[in-house]
Image (cartoon, rainbow, N blue to C red; front, side):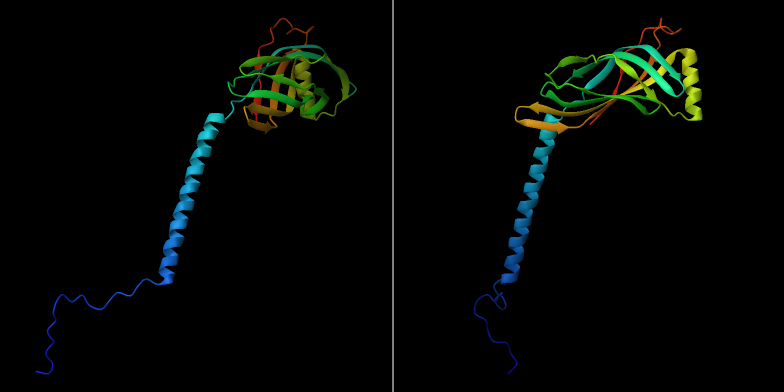
Length: 214
């Protein structure tokens, strides 16, 4: 019969598969490159994470260990004051040495600056404690207090116990071998200082921890 299929000698696999086009090859190459790039990014990220954990510095510890207020009196909006205190700085890091390049200290009362001081540069080794002993802070300042702040001042005057703030603004370097971190931390110390000739002068000034933030 004319419509019979011809006899096939051997296996028949159908028509030949055409070779891959250049477009398919280009996609495979692009996918391979993307996989390699993503793998490198992941590896580099893991390395940075490990280095960050190893070289992450611990916060410096600031405490006001002593404070003495021998004058604090307001007359006709003029505040007369005389203050002295010591600040201890602990470097708990076993890797990082600290270089204090710029050291600004501000004394405030009711959020108004009484004085600004610039302290000398200094160096602190690992696992050591340094002591800052500024000269006596003496002066006068014109104050403009709100009604509520005047009420607070009168209450402090009656108790002879005053709320005085000390702030530090540093530019420092923390060095560990070839690793150098340049930081601008801020330190806030909220003090309750008794007047030396007042009724609370018999009380010992407690060691006061300060807030440290990078």
